[in-house]
Length: 110
Length: 112
Image 1 (cartoon, one colour):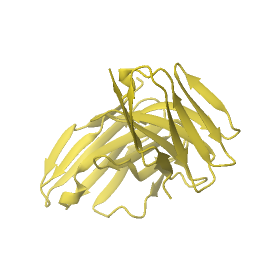
Image 2 (cartoon, each protein chain N blue to C red; image 1 turned 120 degrees about the vertical axis):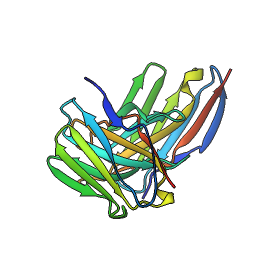
Image 3 (cartoon, rainbow over the protein chains, first blue to last red; image 1 turned 90 degrees about the vertical axis):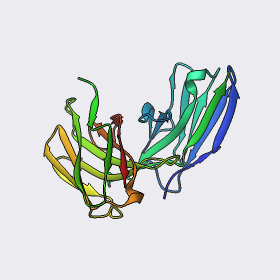
Image 4 (tube, each protein chain N blue to C red; image 1 turned 45 degrees about the horizontal axis):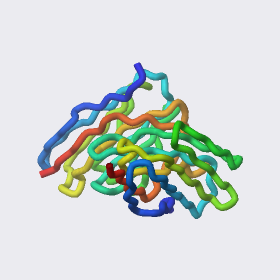
């Protein structure tokens, strides 16, 4: 079962904030976040491990609620360079089978 | 060397051709992956090779066959492909299975 992301797409003005959610029907051990620009490979943003931790990377941070099997990615003061498709990714426990979420297309306008 | 390289960048082949995609990493990573990505869709895992063991997504057709000659190299052999196999093929590696994955630039494959 593929993790479901919401929203499917979002348009922002430079400087605005956004939240992208990732929800799974299966127990998660960890959640990874990636950004993919058009025609390029996905680029790793951050990993969150079991324990409800929250991580930050400049103006991008994320949280992981293992009880709800949900993760959220927070983009603050968005920049043009944030445009792209964001994917959450997770591994089915003990299988090596890695699954990406449905994706969220984000566009930041000047 | 901190990158994953893939060759070729673009490939056009007929349905009767046999071709191979190559993926290489020199980061000492112990897991390597092949993904297929169609336009506006997330990458779909095809194969994982870790600790000298191959794990296969059961839905992948036999016309795709992976080969791991050594721990730094992962090939994907293509034979008798169909037009619907046209996609971006991404290779990735991670220090261990389940760790952060680092992606190569991909091979854009077109099957005529």
